Amino acid sequence: MDKDKYSDLDIRVAKDAKSQTYDAWLGPDRIGTLVYELTAGRVAMISVAVEPEYQHHGVSGELIAGALEDVADSGRKVTIICPVVRSFIDEHPEYAGVVDPERPGIRSRR
Image (cartoon, rainbow, N blue to C red; front, side):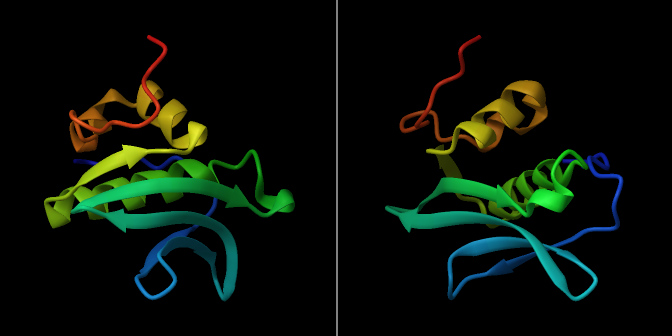
């Protein structure tokens, strides 16, 4: 997948397997977190949070896209628990193939 730039900030997304998070970093500061859980070979995306002062700058989009690309690269599929992730995928259907068709979690309203 060819990720577009969703944020107007220079964000780096990093996976922390120990804490089961993907984190958005702006320099030395963690400004957002996506919590996930490994379950039966799938990645359940639980929640996304962005620090208030960085909201409305595309941080969640960068974070979700980075996490989805990492999952796709691993060959796993995603089960969506977080409504923000569901909305992102609805708006960016190029990521729909990462969603587990048998256990998609929250389904699209479309």
